Length: 128
Length: 158
View (cartoon, rainbow over the protein chains, first blue to last red):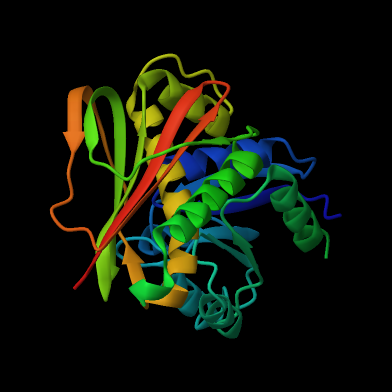
C-alpha cells in the first residue's frame, strides 16, 4: 500500500454521487490528503492543471465534456497518459465497457455499487 | 420489438433494477406490491423524471411521498435528512437515474439504443402526471420500511 498522501479527483455532474464517493473515500484506510470535485470533464482538466492527482473517479455521461472525452484527453497527454482512471456509470453495456477499456480506462464500476466494491477497487489500484 | 416485450416482463425488470439499487446503495429490501398501469392520481410528494430518447422515446418516473424522499436521501448520502431540500431532491433524482439507467441497459437489447437525460425532480402538493402517448407503459409499485415508492416507464415508438 502506498503511504504518501494521496490526492483524488471525483468527476460527476450529480452532486449526490460526488457526496457518496466522498463518504466512501472517508471510510477507507487510504492516506487521502485531498479529494477534489469536478462537475464535468472540462472542470476536471482545469483541476488537474492545478493539482497533482493520483487517481480519477469519473462518470461517463456528463454535460460539456463527458467521461469518454476526458479519458481521451488524458491518454493523449504526456503528463496524464498513465494516470489511473476509474469510470463509474450506469452505462453497463458491453460496447461501452469495451470502448472505455480500449481508450485506456484503468478500471470500471457500474452503478449501483456497494461501498465495499469501490473500496476494494481503490485499494487494489492504489497499492499496485 | 414491442411484441417481444410484454409489459409484465418490463415490470419484472423494472422491479429487479430497483431492488438492485436498494440492496447495494441504500441498504434496504424492497417488496413488490400489486400495481396497475394507470395515470398518477394527484398526490402530495416527490416526482422524479428522466427522459429516454431513441427509436423509442419517453420517460422514466419515480413517485414517493416526502418522508420516503428524505429516507432515500438519508440512506444514499449517509446523512440525516429530515425535510425536503435541494440535496434530498438531488438524491431522489440519482436513485431515479440509477434505476431507470439499469432498466435502459435491458431495454436497449430489445428496442435499440437510447440516451437518457439528467433527472428533473418535482416536489409539491396535488401533483399528477400524464404521458400523452404510451405504446409501452409499465409500473413497479414497491414498499420498504419507510413507505411506498412507485417506478413507471412510458415509451412510444418515434
